Length: 348
Image (cartoon, rainbow, N blue to C red; front, side, top):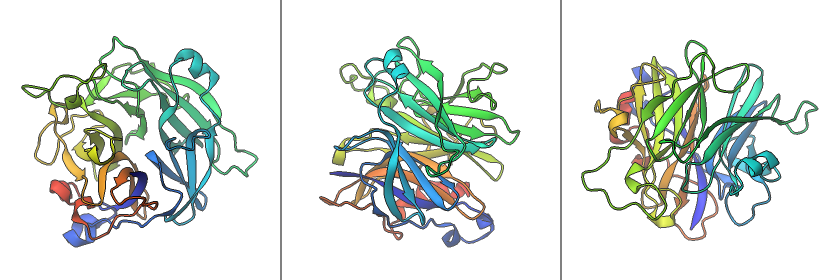
């Protein structure tokens, strides 16, 4: 099996709300080049170049948080790593950490902010850290990753997991960090824009989304949380007066057995409460399906969104079912990967 990243153009853009359903359909891009083994992708543009950050994955691991570059969103090449290896301070903080996960890239206040996570698989002894940079162009004299250190951590006694960060700005200009994986679900904390660290003005931990415990759940896998608790990879985007919370449900990274899927809900407030298209609270297990597997791709998730005046983009990873398939592609005509899936068109 091959793990690949896939890109879609997000359907709810511009004035599309006043047009027909066909006009709001997403257009899928056929990708070429170095897109294999791209997990938890996060995308942004600097100058004329698109940069895709991801979790390092695959047999050739030469560094942490690999970067891929493109001039047109379709042809991609590997263009370096953020780190040569796990930073020494993280090795000291978390000796069992073997890699860095789930980078989230954003730009505000004159700097690029790259939040990322470190953890031990299946444990919530985790942390989220921050890097900043004035540019993403490695040829620029201003290119330098500044290690801002630890932002947030979780411990074994906590009911949340400090992993899968996403930085969002609300309509009042305040910064928020959404995060979470398994346990009691997705949370958010207020961020101080000047430091990129946790706010001292608002220290509340806000609950955004979680899975609902079934009546008779299966026993937990040894040493792991229950499969029924599987929710992670939050991403918050604002559109037409609503905040949209994208999350991944179920299990990633199991080849053809992966049942990962991307779900979404919305709220008038960035801190919730979020509801799906049927009005079910995301804190009670709600979520409208956006991306689910099909007979060519399984486990679409780890999603992130990039909004612009021209178009919005959703990027995610999935497993290609076709043996030895090395390029990520999704047919534009496949209805299972369109915004309209499962009532999602109601959000446009």
